[in-house]
Structure formats: structure tokens, C-alpha cells
Image (cartoon, rainbow over all chains, first blue to last red; front, side, top):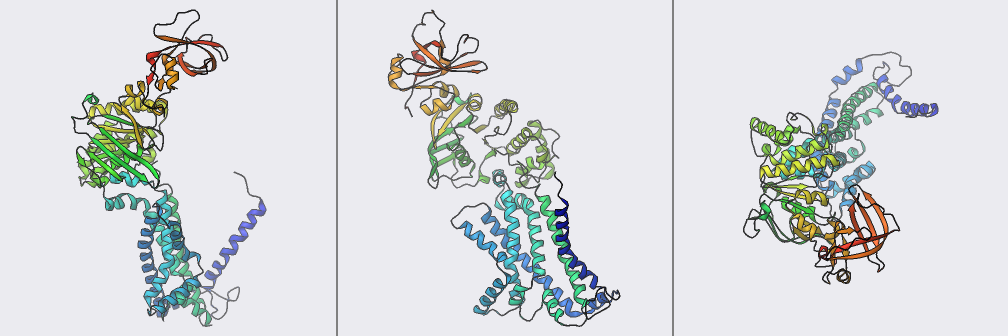
Length: 266
Length: 348
């Protein structure tokens, strides 16, 4: 193993700092006593904003909505993404490549395009904007994450495992439950966690597909414009970091372990 | 030996009638008729892409024929999924379930049949004992050597008591020594169980040494089927002569020149004798003076490639000790008995 030169290490460190120091500021200003501007250093430290957040009903409504949207979008993505992965992982048919591309497209497209497209589609179909239109909007990109995770794991799974199961007397359902699911389970869990995290902090698509509801990120955006009780947004941001960071960390460890699982029967 | 039963009298363990399986334009199996007898060790031998593995998969039910009929012990099985067939497969990559212990792998077939935990653990232990893996139940497949995985795959397939066991190049991944050991063991297991084993291989040595009968595949068809001696001694085509062992293939005219009927013929290298100078020709043999083109030492034998003045190139295999003063470019005198030439049905 060769050692990296000092300059490269410094550059890496600088990049790392650039990415993560802003997060520290968010954390810092969650405790500041100054509520109108972000002066540095903060004139004093307090825990009162946590108490304020605790008592604001509008925050909890937004948190509740975001959690419900993320959960439902993830569930939809889990079912549809897994089914799509199952169909596209191995089978060869005319149009397979374009279809897999179309599947992944929603995550590659700018959110604003997806948002406008969905808004116009809902408008044309005369579907009123509601909780469900947000869920559908989020499901479009959540499916991609689940699909990508599932398809990668399914491709690593030796096809003869499925044949061996059927050969030994298991029907398709038993094979799915006893062989496929245990081998792709962690990938599905990882995919759902990523999907959940994506949905939880989504702004752009939500803006175009929501009616009067405001999800947590939308609430934060509107809160920033107002000069009152600024640290409240910081406290909420800290909570959001915690809520999204943990599943992503878990997803990372789950897929890392998974590499040793599938296909090691060879 | 079961192979001596008249195929017309017994109910075949597996019967193919005009079976065809195409993949797009590729004729993987192109009109195969065969019948495999109960208790027979049947080898399907051929190069890759010759259709032998597809035939195995057709028996297992992973493929369905495009035309023709397949019967297993008299029952038509077209359209039946793999889990409704009384045959089991030992896969080339063994296909052990990586998330299950060795014991649970072996017991899998019982589990999906609803057998209780205690009973299937007991049977799994017995099956593992049969393949000499006593006490390995709690290991993971990843912790086993190639030879051990092979045995687990065998135990897993046999525990559900198949009527026919299918083996897809089961020894391909093993090293030579282990391979020879497993050959003997498989053969012994097959004799003890009295099961039909259908064995796919591209290794002619393996097929000849283990099988009661060998079917030689080429381009989706069976070119020749019979006991190993027959296939080796009397190859019907140039392909069989060349694929099963090695052979000199002679045109009709060349055969006639050696005193045999004017038919395309094969001649095994070991049937050509080396004559010492001054010795008289054995009766019924034609003596050829030739120049040595190449000599290669192969342990027990030496292979001599020689060319006669008439341009006929022959490969002879002579016992290594006998080929004393032989060197490239030197003269050699070969004796060929005309009855060593085997007429073939076609020169292809």
C-alpha cells in the first residue's frame, strides 16, 4: 500500500471540512440565545429552543405529515421496486434496456422536471392536490432507490439457487420466501431506508405536488423567510439530520455485510 | 449389469422421443431420442454447446421441449414444473443456499414438503453420513472445501429420494486427485442405491470410466450411444472417433490400401505397432515404412506422428519403453492389422 502525498491528504481534508463544517454550524446555532440573526460567536447558549419546538403544533404536524408520506412512499417503492427488479434482473426480452433506463430516469431528472410533469399530469387528470399526490410524487424516485438495490443483489444471486430450490420441490412462493428473500432482504431494507431518507427531506417535487399541506422541509423553507425565532429551524434541522442519518448509516452497513452473503455458495 | 436389459422390455427411467429445444435460431437440442434404464449410470458426453446440458435441464424441468415427448418412468412430463418431478439435480456450481447451514441445506427438500424439524434433522444427519460428512451440520457452505460442497449437494439431492439423479458436470470444479476419488465414490453410491444417474460431462475419460452407457452429443443430436467399450472401439463417425479418445481417420481409399474394406475408417493409435528392424511382419498386418514427424512423451506411452512416402500421416501410441531409438526425422516401420481399422458410417 502506497502512502498518499501530504498535498493530497490536505485536499481531502479541505473537501471533507467544506462538506461537514456547515453541519456543525447548524448544530451550534440550535443553542444560541440570539433569535434574529446568526452572529458569530453566539452571544450565549440555551436549550430553550428545544422546548419551543416541543410546544409548536405546526412543527409536529409537519413532522407527522413527512413521516406518513415517507412511510407510504417507501412501502409503495418497496413493492413496485422489488417487482420491477425481479422482472428486469435476469429476464431477457425486447426493450429491456430502455425499460431499465426509464425506471432509473426519475432520479437522474432534475426534481423540478419531475415536479412540473407530475403537476401537469395531476392537473390534466383533474386529481386534486392532497396527501396522496405527495406520496405518489415521492414514490417516483423512491422506487428507483429500492429498484437499484434489489437489482444489484438479484444479479449477484446465482440463478441456480432458484433452480435448486424448485428442483428440491419448492414452488415459486416457497422459493421466494425461503431462498430469494433471505438473500435480498438486507438489500431491500437498505433500499427502503435510503428511500425513506430521500422522501423525508424532499422539497422540489413536494412543492409541485402538495396542496395546502406542508411537509417538514417545506415548513423549514417558509420558516427561514420569517425573522422570528430563527434557532427553531436549527433545532428542527438537527432532528432531521438525526432522523435521516441513522437509516442511511444502517443502510450502508447492511449492504456492506450483504456482499459476503449472496453468491458465496459457489 | 442393468445395461444388459433389453431397452425394449423395460420401462425407461427417462425416455426422449423426438425432443427439440431451440433458443431463437440456436438449435440446442435438435431431435433427440433416447432411453435411460432404471439403475443405469448414463453419461451424456459432448463438447460445450452440444446440447447435453439442455437435455439434462429438459429432464429436470428447467426447460420445456419445443417439440417431442419426455417420459419419466412412463409418465409424460412435458409442462410439469421442476417441483413436480421425481428427479433431482446436482448442479455444476453446487448451488448450495449460502444463508443456510449445511444441515438446513440438506434438509431443504424435506422442509418444503412439510416434514417436522426433528425428523428432517435426523434424515439430514443420515444423508450427511452417507456422503461422509458426519458432524458438519452446523457449518456454512462458505466454510467447506469444493469436495465437501459437492458431497453436500449430493446429500441434498438424494434426501428426497429421487427416481433419477441428474448430475451436471459435478466433478468439473475439483482437482484431479479429488476427481478420481469422487468418480469411484459416485459409482459406488449409484450401485448401492440402484438409482439411475444421468451424468453430463465433456470429459471423455470420466464418461468411459464411470458410465454403463455413453451418449455422444454433437450439435444438438446424439451421434452414438452405447456401452463405453463399444463407443470407444467402434466409433460411428469421425466426430466420435476424435472426441472419445483420439483416432486416425482414414478415407475409403486409404483404408483399402491397408487391406480393409473401402470405407471411411478409424484407427486407434495404440493399435499401430512399432516393428524393430529385420522383424517379419505379423500375419494379417500391412507394414509401412515412414518418416517420423514428431514424437511426444506422455508417461506410459510415446506418441509418434509419422508420414509414409505416399503422404499418409498416422499417429501411433507405443509403450514408452519400447520406443528406444526413435527421434524426429528418423525412419520408422509400422505394422497395422487390417482388422484394427473400424469402418465408420460417415466421414463427418
